[in-house]
Length: 331
Image (tube, rainbow, N blue to C red):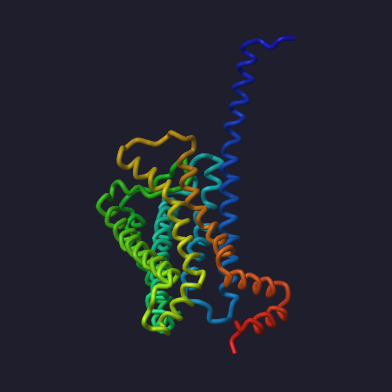
């Protein structure tokens, strides 16, 4: 028996409607996976750093700050987009939407500033290899990190006070602060966050790579003690590892910045690629996961910390023996 044209049309409509109803579940599943990956990756980083009892490198304080910022994003920002992805609307009220938008901007600013301090730390290790241990201490590093968190929280707080309205982006499924009503403040904040950071990162890593080329080419140096200390510091994989982290952060967030800049300039919504806003925003958020991957691949010290953490979780006695053997346990 043949189906009538009206019945065929109804079947097609039902199939299309079925596919459409599946899409929110797919988005919710993606967001749940991202949240779980961020929390797991950064909890591992934090646990590995806190479990190591030795002095370690000063850069570990900055990496710990990055992990805390990413963990807060995975706990307080991403999960709140899962249920709205299912119902395709914001359900938690304007106050929570404003708080989520504020957290996004604050944590992003903390991350950018932290990368700036990491580049300064690596620059000082190369610029002053003989005095690095006295110039860069853990107490000084912790003070810089405290100042970074406080300053970022205060600079980003005007939208939290109700000076503009939060917006739920139905495409990216996240609350974003509407900066168009505060154009002057938005431009000032962008200059304060990106200006010093971009200039500092560009200069410091340019100097580091220039010195790497100079040492590799065998250029003569008058002070042998300085040359020896410089060669030892340049051999530290933290230079390349930190640069890859910065580069990966830029690559992750550049598509989102380009899309927002285009829409802010033209006043039209970009819709060339389906779900482009969802893709570019959550691609940036995924940077919180890639940091752990980079640390595992490029940081021998972090891999050692993971081994110690594994020993600690499996057998405390074996972990203590392992730390004694590698000299990381306090005397």
